[in-house]
Image (cartoon, rainbow, N blue to C red; front, side):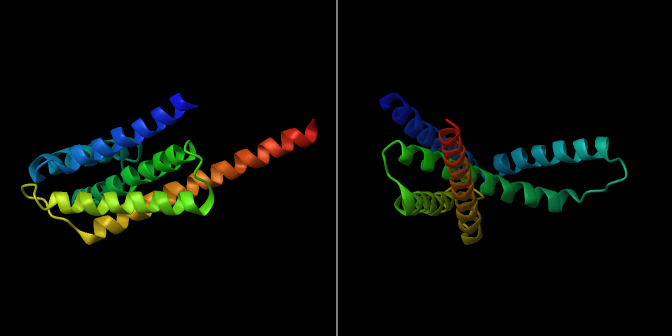
Length: 157
């Protein structure tokens, strides 16, 4: 159990470090990364659906905001898992997870104010927190499915 707890908390720390690293990139580097992802998506869509035309600028904005959402979606899942290894259960775990994710999102946006060409944006905190909340809800849904499956197994025995 100690090994699982250590790995779970290390996963949270590594993920937070990745988020911090990505938000530490100056605007030119961050923009180039998201433009490359946008171009890959456009190339893929054009190969699969040649008649579909995508607006690169709109898609670029969507890619950037999706990165916020899914980065914090994963953080919500990881924090829920880590806190579960510490026997923090129920609503208390949900509230603590949401608080950790929200606090990290706020700190991350404040941090970005000091990065060349970047700015802290309240809308990004909202997107980050929404991603975390969806991650938490997905975690809870799978936990419930797993619990119901275990009950069914016990009934069958």
